Length: 156
Image 1 (spheres, one colour):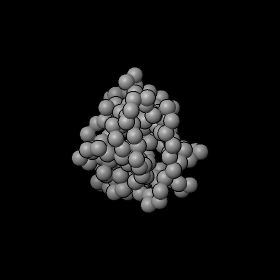
Image 2: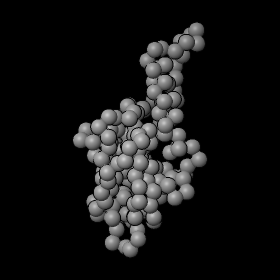
Image 3: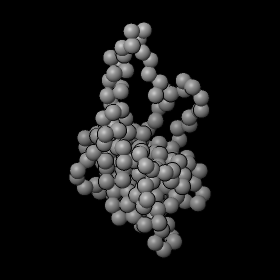
């Protein structure tokens, strides 16, 4: 993180708030970050980012999703909260191949209740709780069998 300090070493209140939000998010969502590996694709969504320094102001939405995995568990990190409360993951649509993309359970890190989800050829649709968990991003923990993106996936 690029955190600017004042000459006396102190931080602006806005920076302290941001760091507190990131720390709170990591406390809940660290299973999707630590000891994970990239999934078969990095993510999906239309927001394009440029590499380089100081290019940090992106308007990410709930359609921008990044993936990590640990063992057989897949994590989908949505970079926004959907306005209608439904998160769609196109990369996890049902496949014609027997036994592929069989989703058993979907959990929202930081939420203790059950989540309703449906899976069609268009993707996995998850109904999130009414209360937003974090202003940063929300993380789904997805368990199932043979979870794979479409072979034509471009990450968009």
